[in-house]
Image: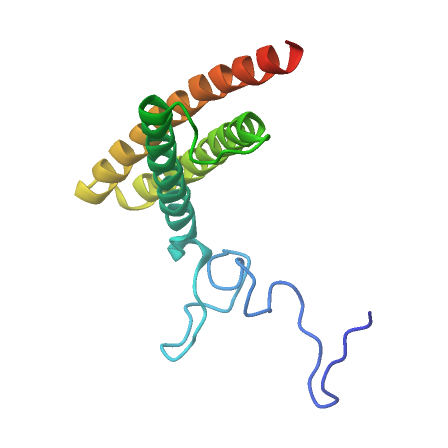
Length: 160
């Protein structure tokens, strides 16, 4: 698909683009600081990596709460809440999926906090963020063990 540009404007290079991370932060760029009315947001200022980590941790918490309720239902009634033929497959898939998501989100947030510390130093926020990332890695460990258990259950039931 061909991009169209206005006839009275010249195409911008990558460095001149308002979305370029090199626009205001590169020593090679002579653009200087952005004007105060600019809506340009620095990629370093974006909290997306931390929001991604929060979002994944919330999803993991909700799924874990569902699994606790499912296990309690099985203990009480000897029947799962999700009573269908693919319970073991669903649990296996979700454990694997959430373990990989937690590892991804924790690693992403760890690089963001490391960048933050190297640029602005260590403060109370970075200490709390580092603790939160450590807890996310512990949660990953729990999901990894859960994935091993669910894979054992899935493949021993499937073979028998």
